[in-house]
Image (cartoon, rainbow over all chains, first blue to last red; front, side, top):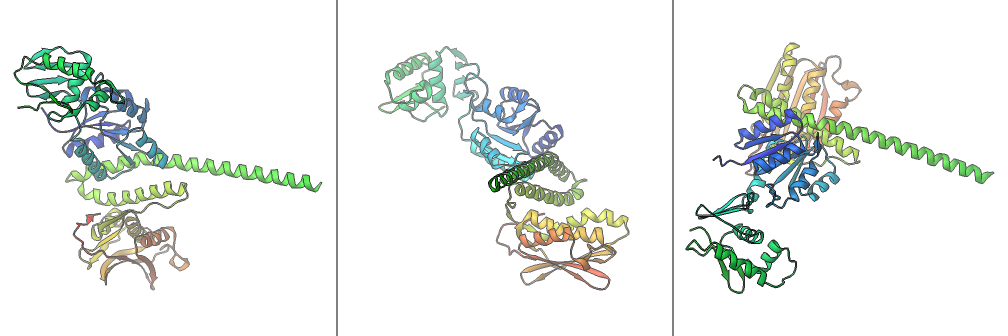
Length: 235
Length: 232
């Protein structure tokens, strides 16, 4: 499998998109191009890019609407990663335009015309920062494989059937195997509780999850007494 | 009677001011649209030149285009800032001077050759670098070269030498009929070059001898502080 980062360029001007793609490919990136909002959204879902370069004025809509769709995705039910790094490229140079784009979730903003070297530098910096973020794609921890797109879990290649909350709990823990998640974090991220409520709900789900993963000799979900839970790291 | 006259005058003035404000707004909107329409094609040109630079056959053409595009970018930034009644924000960068000057001349070389006008470069300033806004620098050098190419006659001679910490560029050409009418003051190109030279921390002087016009562009040299200068 090709490990190079995939950059998706959403730009309605064909020539600009082609030259941008050519230059990025020459600099070692895989590149996909979409000419409009609908095509861009489909490409984000199907191609799962590492970074999005987004023009604002598109034939079939505004790039900011596409950005809204990305940022409002849940990362589980849809295939769209809500934390996808996004650089906005646009002919709009006003301060209010910049503020609006950042407010809607852009990670960077570069007015046209730009030096390609500057764009490349910004892409590299964003990808570097994004390296540490939890991946929203399929996760594998040892024999345990979790796919948020199909909501499927397999242990040693055998399917494990989980309820929605059990899956969400396992997926949350798998974002950083080995890290202890506090009960408060898990109740907030998985159940949406704002304040620390009754932790028995969490404990009950964690207990059922442990049982369902029991065919393996290894304890996958570990209770760290008085703190929370963690998923053990791959051996 | 007097009160009603004052009221009429007041309303008339208010109406005129309103109409003037609307007209100003309409003009600014037209400028904003023109600015926006220029940015897309300019972005395409930047990317095309970058692509050209990667191709060994196109590399020679890319350098002069890049310098001219830098002027275009600075001009667009000026336009956008002027709309808001401001000046463009200058960004200091360390640039090596010789490639910038040579690429500015290269942009005119074909036209000069076709006109039978030779170009001579006498570079005695070594690897001189300047810390200045790249747009201002490209504009100052570009306008001086363009002035000699467009309005002069005979050969275009460029000489570069150090003057203390500064770097002095002399662009000499036969005066011809136009020569930006040095006897009647500088034309727009040289006025822009003069402002740009000042922005870059330098100065521009135009000297006319009997048959020649010499543009003397002096720029503050930047001593090497470890960071490699960018080839312009």
